[in-house]
Image 1 (cartoon, rainbow, N blue to C red):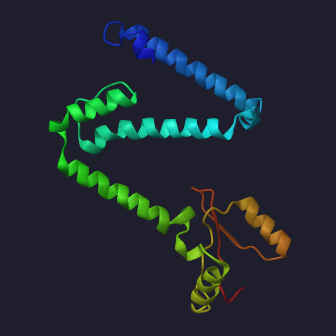
Image 2: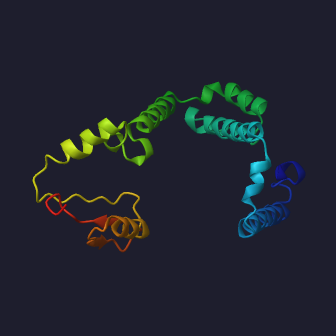
Image 3: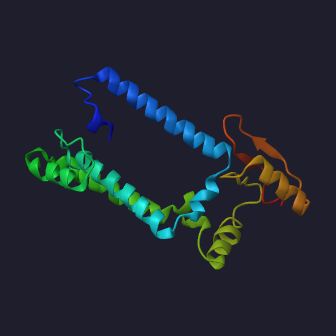
Length: 191
């Protein structure tokens, strides 16, 4: 948008000044909205508006990734649908089959990982109550008694303290200095 008003090649200093100024004021505006707790304003927008905005942003990001996915070096600077697609098809000679194969392999890997590692826990701790019982009680319960199990994924110090207070449990902690996670070092025998 700024490129349409000021050319970075003709007047680079003015272009940088305007880019930094607009970025600064956008950040200041967002920070003030956050400090004033005005995030509830988004609730007044219709769901169709929000979905349209997110879908449009996703399309723009996806189209801009075609340059890297296809291995094109001379790509358009515009973000519209027609200029990007015309740039993609006008530069068919620059397409690299190695880049395309690598990109699609990683895309398939990401889509598979989404189903295998749902919410970061994988299928081991996900699913129906019966599946969770099978994973937790049968599989983990069959380990020898002195086996230590470290339950620390996405557990904060406060939530662990709260669980210990609510259920009247002893809470021996092992805290890691470089992370927010806490590992409870109880063994199955202690439980």
